[in-house]
Image (cartoon, rainbow, N blue to C red; front, top):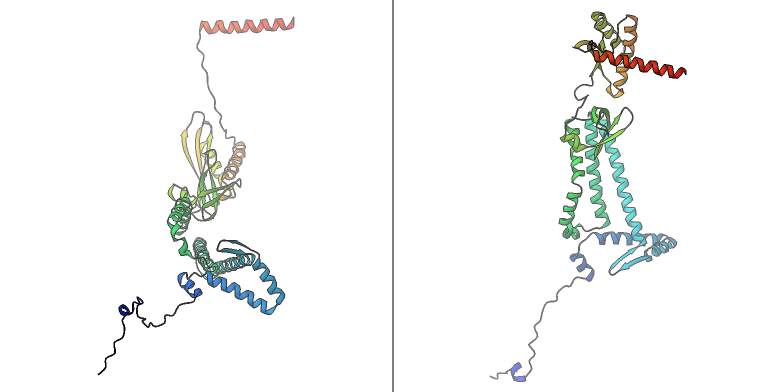
Amino acid sequence: MTVTTLPTPADTGDETEPAIDQAPVDEAPVEQAWSLADPAPAADSVAASEDIRERVSAQSEIAGDFLNTLDALAISVGDFRLSVWDVLVVLAILAFVLTVAWLTTRSLNWLLRRFTGFDDTQQLLGRKILTIVVWGMAFFIGIDLLGVDLTALAVFSGAFGLAIGFGLQKTFGNLIAGIILLMDKSIKPGDVIAVADMTGKETFGQIRKIGVRAVSVTTRDQREYLIPNENLMINQVENWSYSSKNVRMQIPVGVSYGADMKKAEELMLEAAKDAPRVLKTPPPTVWMSEYGDSSVNFVIHTWIQDPEEGVGNVRSAVLKRLWWLFKEHDIEIPFPQRDINLRDSEQFERLIEALAQRQAADGTSGKG
């Protein structure tokens, strides 16, 4: 039996290792490898814009050349390239998203007013919540359509979130405060509240609108105050129409000590009842408040239901009517009076004589 010995690498001096058969390995194409490494939606947006240009070129050569020209007008910085065509695509996407969000908001607000039994305050709260939800969804949908990879912003999310938190702290606080005010209905559009003007003097105004940041309050002289929602939530607020729109007015009146008090009270009630805006129920009342230095003081209590139309004009109407009623019935409206008693004194008499002599001397010199 013959044995054949194969030469080994050591015998031949060949350092080459024996070949080993290996199964072929499928290699992904370059484009697919890129997409696996970065599955951002930007590729879809670029492909969609390229597909649009190809379809337009297939339909019209002139339009295709025009779009290709727009794509050729570009700015390149390294691997970044921005063409006029890309800008138009972005603007078209933004216009589409904004239009859809606006129409959706209008439609939902119409449905909320038309088919719900909510009152005005609840409808306002619902509209604000729907607006926030719709525009929030529109933002993320627009980001997705534009192909912006939000994961690329993860590195800056911490610092960005901290900056937003400090910068928009008051804004978000006022937004939440406005929603809370609408939910508990402590302040709502149409209410009349007391506010302070620039000089610190207290006045009143009607709430016209509860906005995202502030409450709009309009006074009788058409001055509009914008009060932050947070201030109205954490500070004391005098709401004249919280549980009822009826407001009681106090009108002070004084009569002389020699007047007929019973008749004076009757005339005060008559003047209050004659005012057109004074409510019949509850009826006006008259209280004696004090014995003053020059008069007996009364207070007329009247009720009105429309304080937003003004309070001073009602007080003026009552006082004008009362003036003529007092004149007709000889009721004296007193004014401050002082009685001065002078004691006999030699010094005072000499002072009077000196003044008389000086007056006489001045008269004589004037004649000369």
